[in-house]
Image (cartoon, rainbow, N blue to C red):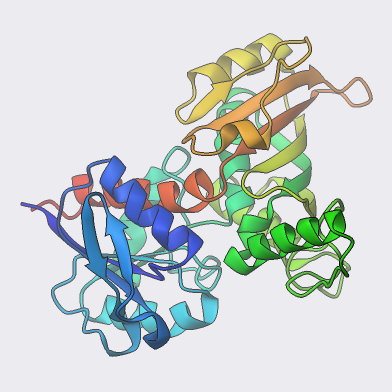
Length: 338
């Protein structure tokens, strides 16, 4: 017997990826219900070889739905995720709205699956920020090995993290440059084509952006409250795939070889680390892949017990849809058995 699953935000980048991931991983569903805004109601989306009609989120009754995978934007989720939870549906929410709520578990299944048990407090489980997810998947085996004190990370984040309109803007600006048309920033604050923008989300009082703040506070909630994190988040002209340059300071000595071996054994991690031309993974190569890829593992000679590494992942899959479905799999196996 399978589950009745709603996908909230089914017409967006992440929503479509959630539908595809549910099907690919053969999640035990009896029925999938795609939901979106009123203007998208009636549109058709694919679930395997089936074509499903999108229903209006605002008028949908969640009674009888077992699990909702939600990615409609934070403001929409703030209204409808609690409504779904109140109807007895367990919501796995991909937006930023609930992540730091103390009664809402923030989960990466390879890192803290035991936290899923806390869903009973609110009926909601939060999916972390995409850049946080790939980083903590790489950090967890190293933290177990030598205990992490501090992380300094610079991200190189693709435009798909800002939605379909952002992807369209990169495409349109690139085309405009080639045909000598004017370039007009709309979704971004500056030209994104052939450029890098050190600004993701809003600025905060201390000069950091909210994206950078998310990486720090989410890492502490998921992995260890004593880890210090300093992040610089940069949007780059790549369609899909986030990259991170991570510098990690440990409490205890750790060798490159031990770190490499711990990462190779870790679930959800692939190590591609050859000190030769092309012996590393780039965002373009990780598109469509489930794992987090780690390359360029090396000692930092300027600081004791410190390593640097390069980490890439598909932000729409592991950074969003896949992580959400993996949470649902643990939930179904351990907590919602039928």
